Image (cartoon, rainbow, N blue to C red; front, side):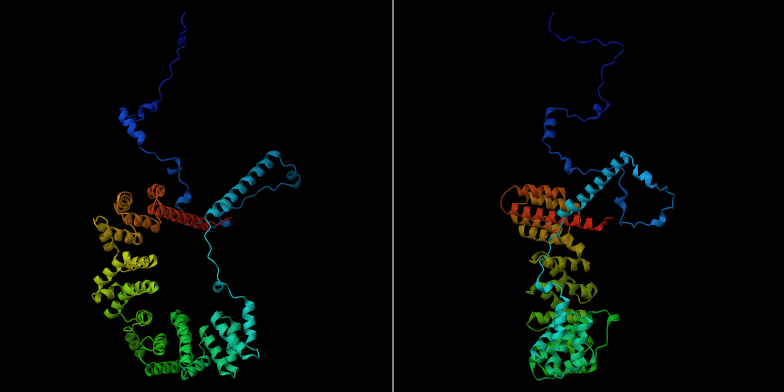
Length: 504
């Protein structure tokens, strides 16, 4: 007798277990080489595979949340329990209600305490000039207008104008001083503050016009500065909100006298011409002065003249377009370069084509997409390209430059695409390939920055950035920054998504 295992015989028509029906459907490698190749291929983890439920939720197709309308529900008769039955509540129902209350509490804690904490936005620091003015402070200044000390009265009148609180109590207190006060300095400060607050009544304007005739140049400049701010706010307001300016004809006459009296490029002349332009955009004296100021060496004055000519007076010609392009290329103030793009969009493609400057404008905008050091200016340039209907042509040029052999050209193309956007999927994979295989390190750095600027939170981008982060050097640092930016953008999107829902 050996120790071999006894195999029981099958009786009673019992069949051996069959192989599963789907075993033949599973593809198996034919040889060991193919099997080893499949094992080397990295497979996606469970978290990378998006889970889908069938059928889809109807919320996927809703564009907005509908409010509950009780009129849509038909009234029904519900039997109300008596107090005796409420006392004799069955333990099962009591246990069920307790479990439901716990579930609701857990759900609310998840939504509000855990999820929202991850999506909190960083609050800006509140400075003194950003704080709201307390009513007690305004009341103290109004009471100081009646103080026996003249310096305290002057300070209160100036402060009420600079704080910019156009309340009825403030305006009435300053207006009473303009009408009843005998002190010229206090009357002037009150009138100036009223002009800054938007009150351009006749008695206020007469006081300011009287001080425009004073020999003191400092007083003239101070008065013109207040009028410039007040008239600019008046001209920006919609036409149906315009109010009558007191002593308007006298003000225009005195402003023209100041323009003709001083030198063409003087500060007083320039501010007086600006005030004239706000009052009457077709005034020939103001237009001539603004055109003369285009030759000024001070770029700040030149840009103010351009804004007045283009936006307020509607004068657009080849000289003005050339000056706008000059500011866009060479102005040392980045805000002026950004605003120059707005002037180009205000001028429009039709006027640019009529003046024969379409190619010049196109070349400057294409150059500024990559040469501009400030991101906000590059974004404004991209918006101007889109407004002027040049985006498709720029895209074609940049996509060709990605395949150039020269490193500088490829780098400029990547920087430009970082603000202009990507229109084809093939361009996206080209940038991914450049991030992995490009021979120039600066080009790869710009690809990383382009992905973070465009907010491309893609699984391929994240995988590539994570691999670069594991290394050392500038590529690792840039990848870490880009991942932080992508995480921050995703948190902000979650915050906005949560804010769009109303908690009942």
